[in-house]
Image (cartoon, rainbow, N blue to C red; front, side, top):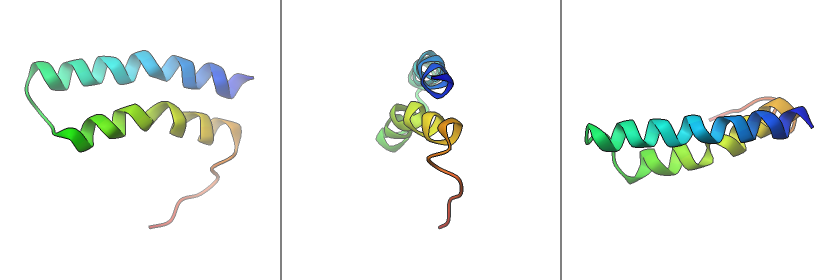
Length: 55
């Protein structure tokens, strides 16, 4: 249940970052997509579903 709480808490942070980026006209569509996926990534890490990443 804690992982869901972390993911929900990261949504306002992602929205705030998106608004700041839009206000200062920084970034492109890729940045906004990454911000939209932020809560999913936070949930995956805190729940243990994502334990490591490789490129």
